[in-house]
Image (cartoon, rainbow, N blue to C red; front, side, top):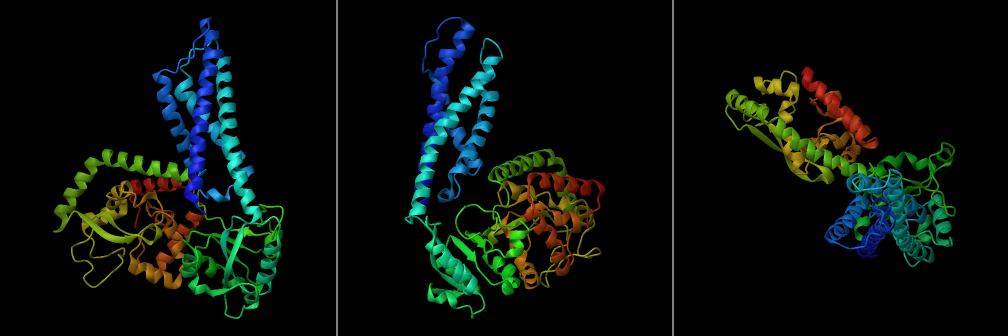
Length: 470
C-alpha cells in the first residue's frame, strides 16, 4: 500500500476543490452581490488580488485539513467520517475566511453577508466532499474485495483466537485484515497453528511487528488469561499499530464495545490518539508562543538569576543533563545550576529536602521552580512541551521500569516543564516517590486536553508565587 501516493491524491483533490470553490464564489460575488450595492453590472476580472487569493486560500484549507487530521491513516477513512470531517472543516474555514476577508466587502445591507457565507460554505463543501467521497469509496471497495488489506497478527492461539480467525476469514465483504500469523502468549496456545503460521512469543512482538510490517494487532486471549492483558498492551506501547481486543461479556454489558461495522466480530479498539490532531497543533503553537513570550518578558529575571548563581559558588550558570524524551529519544535538559560542582561524583543521586549539595540560591530556585526557566529553550527546540510528564535520566527509568513497566506510556508524549505529577509531588527524593508521581502522569496522558494543560499551568504559577515547591 503506497500511503504517500494516496495522501497526495487527497491533497491534490483538496487544492483543486478549494481553488474551484473560491473561483466560483468570486464570480458569484461579481454577478450577484456587488451589483446590488453599486446598481450596475460588475465585470468579472481575475485581477492580481484574485490571483494572490487563489494561491493562498487553497494553502489555508490544506493547513486546516492537516490540523484536523484529515490526512492521517489515509487508508482507514470511511464515507460517513468523510462527510462529518468535511462539514466541520467547511464550517470552521468559512467562518475564518469571513472575518479575515469578507467582512470588509461592500454590500447593500447586512443580509448579503449571510448570502456570501452560505454561498461559500455550500460551494466549498460540495466541491470538496464529492472528490473525497469518490477517493474514499474506491478505497472501501478495494478493502471489501480483498485487494487491499492491513497486515495483521493475532495475539493468542486458543479457542477464542481460532473462532475469531475463522469468522473473519470467511466474512464477505472482507473486513480488511491480511492475517500474517499469530503470536503465542503462554507457549501452550497452539490451536491456531492449524490455520496460521506461529511467529514467536509475546516477548518478541516488537521484532515480529517490524519484520512483517504489521499494521493491526488483534488480542484474542481466553478470559483466564486477562491478567496478561496489561502486560501485552505495555509491550505494544509506542508501536505504530492499531490494537483491537475481543471483548468478554462484561465488556459488552458495560458498554465498552463500540461497533464501527454492522458485520464482523465485535472488537474493542484501543484508542492510541491521545488528543485530537487540532489540539496537538494548538498545543505546539501554545508551547512555541508561550516560551518565546516568557523568555522575552523574563529576560531581567534570567539575568538576575544568572548573576546570583555565578556568585553562589564556582561552576557554570547553566547545568545541562541528558534526559530521555518522547519515543525514548535522549536530549539535554537545561537548568540554572542549583548544586555545588561535582555533586554526583559517586554516581546518580536524587536530591532531598535537606540536601547539603544544594546551594542557598539553589534552594530558593527549587522552591519557586525558577531553576526550570532555561527549559523554555528546550521547548523552543521542540524537545519539550510546557506541560507534560517530567523527563527522567536513563538510570532512573531503568529502576522505575523494574517495578512499574507502564512507565513507557509516558514516552508517548513530549516531556514538560511542569506536570500533574510535579504539581502534586514536586521533586522526587527516591524511586518510590517517582512511582507514586508516575500514576498522576499516566492519568494526565489518558485525560490529555488543552483544558487540563491550562489547569496545570495555573497550579504551577500558584506554586511559584507561594514558593511552596519542594
